Image (cartoon, rainbow, N blue to C red):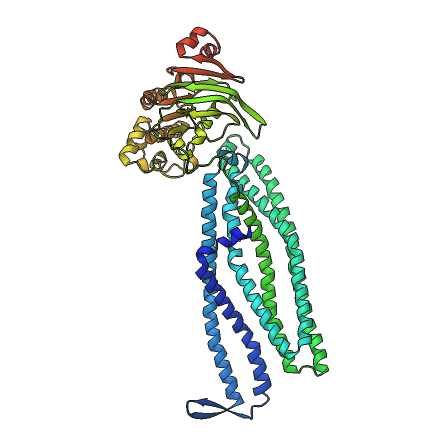
Length: 584
């Protein structure tokens, strides 16, 4: 996991190195002030009557102690101007680097989302996935920028301070730095508990997002059933859990911060007591004691940095764990570069002893299902809910893989085809039509993003939606609203159907594609369907028998598989299940 995190610095190595170099310069400059202060106190203030000389070229200029103090002050001022420039680089470019790392991670995570299977989205809530790609990555970005920089600065300050103070009095320095190590040990000891609470907060934050997203998406249904109070009550449950989780996290954070603050105060107390003892014993003088106080003041800043950094590490680590967990998931159905390309298929589809279930066998849908569809044949599938009609439509383009048995197209197992070429050859309209936020034109173009405006209009006409669109004030540039809220169910279906016309697939699968259409509209587009599937293989799933009456074969499915099979006239003559459904 650490190796994966470090890999995101690769594209930003120049900025990263310059950031650390600037941080190093700042640390060195910070170490200069106590050194200069000690020199002034020891050499110049008590000896201001002594003359000093500075050689400039061939000239010797006499100077007293006061002038040297001014020179040192001016020198430090110039150095501090340079430090301000370094600090600006660290603050600005460091954060930009963190933002770009976040961008790279977000791109990779979004690409992973696009690659994962249907089955993955059956198990994960949308709000949880949203929190992974927003809140979690923001915390990772902060950790990516601040932690290496803070570690580097703190290390330089610690090492530099230890070296210089050791030259004054090694024993006193050792005693003080042992206590500093105790502060570090305390910080490390509390990190595990802090990390556990951060993980809990992250988990519940995702659930909270999911609940909000779900409730707002269904707000119209909520209002239709007057369930506003019910939704508020359900929301309050997860909201309360999140608040309690945050309460535990803040408790651990308080223990963490208060403990460190107390130890830092004790460190200052130790400097006062131990330093006073060493002054009394004549081991150091007052100037050296003052220097110790200055360095301890500088040490407190990296300690505080480490404390804040530890919190960032906990938050960033908790977020990166979820990021890494998602990135490690391999889609079960993925494309192989060496796989066969499905191009210009004849459309012969064959199911052989197919068994399929959801939830790892908990819900069995198909058992030893076999069916052969001839090239150019139009098949109608009917049956009660739960017998596997929609499942069949999802197995052909490999949205799911069969548990056992096989499905082949043109005599080749669909698992041997490149999955992208397989789905490119299949036009699939699902019962639950999804409309993206955007214009009507954008949504139709989803069938073929490279299509021309003329092709978009032609597809809309064949789906019997063109007249509706041109009557709108903005025509094809009309926005649909979130999830197509401004469209009726039938209009959504016709948008989806127009995508299919635009895609021009070789195999057509319609899953309740006309379920939301009125009888008049259904008849208007039926001839267009017949034209679309001419010389193409088509599988049409329907509850409304009028949609499939002109099919070459009608398959009546039951819980145990195929009950009846034949064309409309044959099944009517049989006077079985199909006949009874027709009579209802």
